[in-house]
Length: 455
Image 1 (cartoon, rainbow, N blue to C red):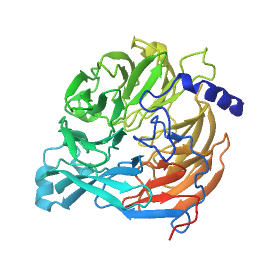
Image 2 (spheres, rainbow, N blue to C red):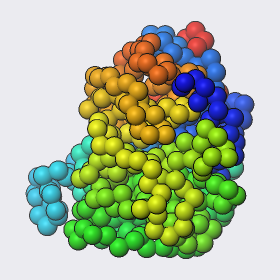
Image 3 (cartoon, one colour):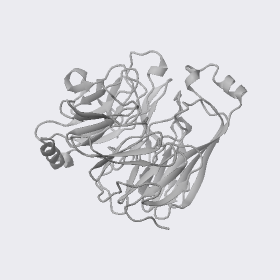
Image 4 (spheres, rainbow, N blue to C red):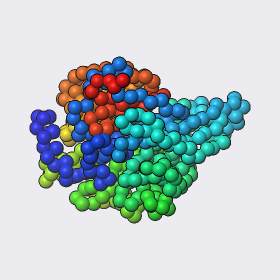
């Protein structure tokens, strides 16, 4: 039954697709967080499955600083961001944490420098290492987070590096010259998280702080603000329960392009050209969302509009499926199902046809049926998880914070095919370039190939 549904879904997927990036050109193209369509899926074949530091490692390049942004690639270049910090004194920590909420779950740095790094895809050599900005007293951050967690976006000859409230930079992809910069200031409370997305001429930024919550678009050519739309009113009055760190899902449904963005309490669809709200669904009391929604097309194109499936963060952690063809408040009409067992708060989901794979923060892997949330299987996979899974070549890659990658066969039964221990924590989601894999650890970027290691 699952194989039949998978074939049906693949036949109609072209009718419902990402509006931002439609294909993976030869030579490696991974232009944004979770790949060309933002779903963590690649069509590449012959990718490495059993690899490691002693086999299949094409190169490994140390990266200074700390950053959980994922690598992006185009035209033989890889881009990522990083943050260099100095340690604050105890007196500085005490002073700057004195008047913040939940100070025990936050830390501060003495100073902060934000950088963009460009590497040669073939050799791993750093060809650009650009200082973008420095801050003498950066805001508090959660110790598990970084100041460089949002993933850059590549669009043609431009690279957009986003650091949340610390600013957004547009760079020339060839020269690394700064074309423009803009800064939309909010209070993240625990540091930046959500990555931007590009639709036509607009760079979409999600700004869900504890002080204000809105979505904005910048003109990708000039950096000027095109529109800004406030988030819907929420039941929670404490700003800590109004924050979120989501990345937009750009989706075409029946010829209408939508930017679908979860936040605290609400999942909202916007017209990415104007910022006008198209529809909204009240998902409950979840907050601090940091995942990207996925789209599962219908098995029969004439049947329905498919499902947008997302997780609701903390507080009320659930997976919720919503039909994306409504108008106005669709809470009572378009929520298809919801489930609350073994749901991730940080890793996003990945879908293969009718099957949804998700791993919660504590390592419980679940496979659900997209149509009704029926559990196909569950399996404990050791480790703690923040990075989102990758589906490529008939396998799913799960990276844990302890530096271990578990490779599982894409199937309706659990079948583990490899375990790989890499060097350093894995917090960033992996990328695919050509038929190779990129993994960013806390200390380096690694490229793995099925070819023998090059000396």
